Image (tube, rainbow, N blue to C red; front, side, top):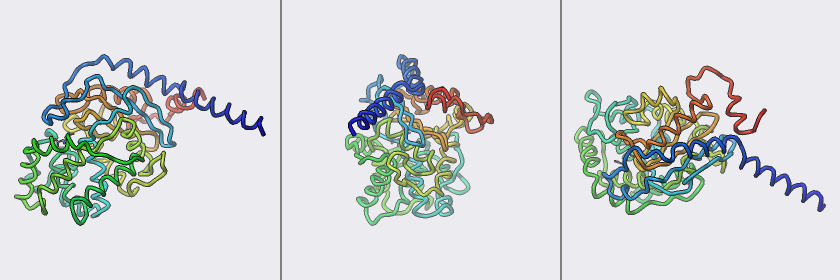
Length: 341
Ligand code: GLN
């Protein structure tokens, strides 16, 4: 009896050591060390509360579809989700209304414009896609619920399923966005002018500002990304976050539009569906393999995290994760996770 429990303990210990010394963990630590000194970029300051972030914050996390976690740096520092929320609320709108109806309201074309452009497709009057602000505001207007509280609770519940933990709102960021959000207000009024946005505009904008103000960590981003990589099933809690039917819709718009007007170059260089936010988060999905979360608040001129773009580019290249990598040999990734095979 005693012998057995000693053996169990020893096994648990060796398991922990394996995770601590795994080549993938070591690789992430090297990456973190390499890019920590990079000070390019600037913090988003058009939402005053966001400018209070620390430029040194930097976290990287990878979660595999079988629930293994590798993380380094400020992986548990909270920050606001901002635009990283957009594909997931889009997924909920698809569940609420189905593909055809949602497509009649919001297109799926990359726009080549900035994320906050006040522009609609001239022929259809639709926002170009759900990843730019116009599209995301239209999507927020489609979320079902009797009243604002019920709609917000549905979003909290949605992200609870994706992250596996209770979500909280950064009220200061929410209020900051709401008081300085006239550009988003202008977009909403333009859509109403064309009959593309019904209902109470201020309520819809509030829901949009609230989804942007949800607090997450870099670890959460990797779990969310791994959930999409795992066909909508959270690999840690095993709870379904979204109907598997819509995962490909979400990944498609992330692939073509997720990094704003850097999306083409991102698709070319990194080759993974991804989404960034002006809070400094980026998540990237390697379907059927893993999810990546990176957090660093210094942004480039397009609103993407500078360290985040570098890290995702490196990880994708190192493990051959590009969607169109024709080499099917994934030995390098398997060895990084399991040791030499
Ligand atoms: N809340 C931000 C805005 O609407 C989101 C933008 C972003 O993360 N790119 O401007």
